[in-house]
Length: 409
Image 1: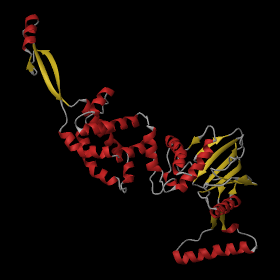
Image 2 (image 1 turned 180 degrees about the vertical axis):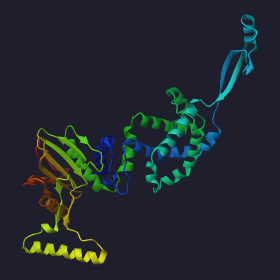
Image 3 (image 1 turned 45 degrees about the vertical axis):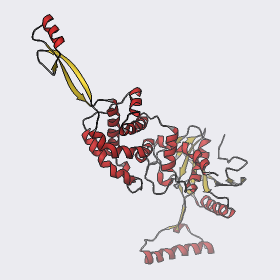
């Protein structure tokens, strides 16, 4: 499959997942910190873009050259404040009181649209840095180095504006700022539009797609992308779908329900606590030569590993983790009634497909559950006509028949 096709299938569900909670990025890409929200993804996009770096480097000049305007206030009182407006003063003294003076007090103000746009951007960027340590997770990235050099200018400008309140401008005022002769005002206007869109949750589809593509999916890691392609194919067929936050208390990626069953989809973990993909040493009983050899192998491994690597003995003889698991539970009793175990191989090579089939059957026959459940296997590959035998099926994007799931109505 073309990489672009995989991305187009996966991105809408990553967006949904972000809206509901958190992308567990370690499951998607290598060496990637957790991303908590769409806002964080778009903030990264703003921090990385050229306009941000240019504005930060221009801040010292911008703060020195801030435009100021004249604010004139006319006062009618016995006290003179500013320049006397003699014509109106004479009229006032003739008609009202000789003690009245009309004076015009002139003050210089920075409350101009271009300054408000610039201040809004500076204060917002400083708040993003101060509120959490999200950006610190990226300090080792190459793109962070030039940004780090410019951050002192931002912090210094933010100190200068510590008593200034953020103030939005009208669309007409913004258009004038976008055409300002000073470059830093034009840069600020560009960032202002993006920041307000994030704050108003008005996400531009193209910008969000590019940000997700760049920050959440590594183009070279197509195996993981292909796994997500199959998760999306499963999720697209469900109604009343719920995507779950990835926390230590929630293991399921998504859940839905049918008339009789509650269903949970697990990815990149071993499922709920009701399923175990491991075999312990004390479970190897019997006198069959294969069982005896496996038991002796495990015992000798513990002895040798203790000497060679100071490793503590382990009772685990075999452990596995399928690519995905779908658990079906009875809605009335909450009893586990069926499992779909999925193994994904992004390949057209028959030998690699056979290896995937062996791994899938190993999971299916070695899984331990707290009940007698029906077990189904699903081998997902890149190219195959599709077929099934017993409780196992092989599927691909090229299959003439769609894959099947238990209890589908």
